[in-house]
Image 1 (tube, rainbow, N blue to C red):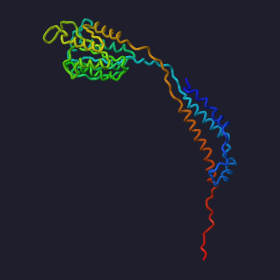
Image 2 (cartoon, rainbow, N blue to C red):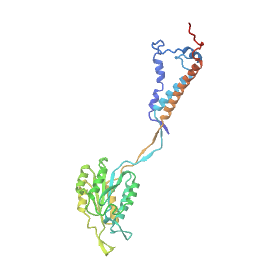
Image 3 (tube, rainbow, N blue to C red):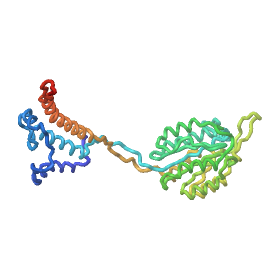
Image 4 (cartoon, helix red, strand yellow):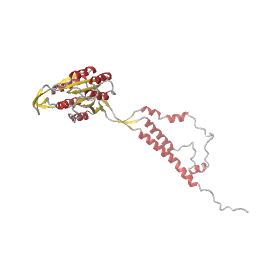
Length: 348
């Protein structure tokens, strides 16, 4: 529907009539008036109506219409559409996922068949991201170095797709936990103080990178950013390798460091040894960091003030043209140029 955002502007409509009633008319005998030599002939050409104090009916109608349109524009007409739900802004969650070589270990089982740690992590993290309605979610991937794969965004589908495309060893085989925390903090530090969260998942210990993980955690504590750490690695299980059937364990996992990182920042450390356990970890984080409130409903507005304003300018311009052009044409026709009395002869 069409509405007026500043409807009180219509109170200005009678202003010209009020001014006309209370103000004195201009003095016709004011000095310094512009004198037009051909005013008399111009007056005759216009049928004797050139008196500047008289106004024809169409000029009065045009002026009234221009005033009405300008007041209408000032009242800010707008088209207001139907209600549209907007997600309430919730938390800012960065997810840091380990892509080191050990994430290719097949010590998890899905449907009785062994699968890689990364595949299980993808499934659990995908469900977690999908459930974070109203939150901004970002993605950091790390191995030898850490890099931002997706900035904080409401587009959770894009983040899920980027996570699904991640591959083991994309940037190396080792683990730079400290750098992953630092890259995540760089994206979270400028966000509102409440609701800044980092979920870090790894299956190893920090053995690469420039930043020490504990030092990075201390920086997160100063910034008020909570870090939830997840240690991934299944229970010892027999798998087929090039050297025959061997027992695979996650002995590289530095649980002490991960627990200290979480404790320093007010987060929590979780250990996931199977598929259901990892899914339960993300459900626990959901409870610790609940999703934001219900969506806020707004009505989109499309401004329409430029239509009456533009029409008012057009009518005013046409009024000026109609009032002046005929007079100028009539004056041009009545002007015959200098009188030629023949050649001038010089007397002797």
